[in-house]
Amino acid sequence: MQKIVVWLGLLLLLVACTSAPIQVQSQHFAITVAVSPEGIGTRPITVTLTRSDKTPVPDATVTVTAVMTQHGMLGVPLTLTPHPDGTYTNAALDLNMAGEWQLQLQIVQGATTDTLTIPVVVK
Image (tube, rainbow, N blue to C red):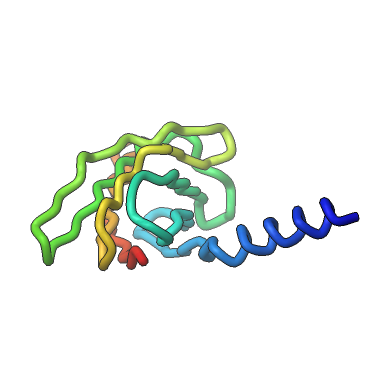
């Protein structure tokens, strides 16, 4: 019984430390970005793309670049790995300082290109 209580406490702590995904609309796609703002360093990022009819977009190229303009920091552009369900992932997003970052997303699907910037404050 004590192990169950410990595991439940750890699960609640884990849920409390995660943030809700960011949902935005670009010119052509509905986009959900899941990235934790907690702590500095490398973390995973997941981007989900859907069309207006809510069908997944599994055949785009998605890159993300982390920029911290107030300190002149420009991250290396990361290409995310596509998955059949319309998610794109990478485990190496480096947010190596606390403060306000801008995630610059570029989405290319055929002749369509969308770019957008999403703010993330790292605590």
